[in-house]
Image (cartoon, rainbow, N blue to C red; front, side, top):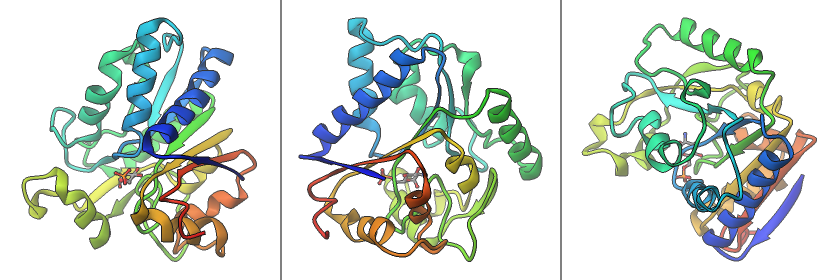
Length: 241
Ligand code: GLP
C-alpha cells in the first residue's frame, strides 16, 4: 500500500489524474475501472483539460464503472450512466461501444451481474481501478457485511448510504434501495487500484480501513492486501492518523 498525501481536494485530484493519464499514455488500450461520487469529479475535470490540450488520448481505452442503481434507466439524471456522461464521457473520446456500466434498467439481477462479469473478463480484466470510499468504508456499493462479496452482485443499500446519497434526489423516498456493484474480488483482481479520499468526515473511516484489522465490516480494509494499491488522501482525510 502506498499512501500519497495531498494538500487538498484539488491537489488530490491532480495527483490522481496524473497517475491515470500516465497509465493511458503507457498503455493506450488500457481497461479503466471508473467510479462516481463527488470524490472523482475533480479527476475527471483535470483529465478533460489535458485531453483538450492533446496531452492524453482515450481513443483506445475501454471503461467499466463500478456500480449502478438498480431500477434507474440510463437517462435518469441520478443514474450513474448520466453522471459519467455529464462529468466525463461526453467530453472525451472513449468509443461509445467500449463504455460499460451495469444496466440498472435490467431488473433480472442474476442475468445482469453475470453479463457484466463476463464483459470484464472478455476485455482482459481491469488495468487500473479508480475508487472513492463511502462513509462506512464501502467501495463501489459493497456495504459492510459478514463476508466479502465476490463478483458483481445486487446489494441492498444501508440506511447510512441512502442517507448520504439523498442530497442528489428530491427526497429520501426517491433514493433507490438497491444497486448492482462489482464485487470485492472483481475490484481486487484489478492490476492497480487507485483510491481518492478527501475531507474530515472520512478521516475516521480512513484510519479504520487502512490502519485497522481487515474485516468485511469495513469493506475497504481488504485493499491492504492488494499488491498495487495507491491511496491519495488530502490532509483533512488523513487528520485522524
Ligand atoms: C457512492 C458510490 C461509491 C462512492 C461513494 C462515496 O456510494 N457508489 O462508489 O465511493 O458514493 O461518494 P463521495 O465521493 O461522494 O463521498
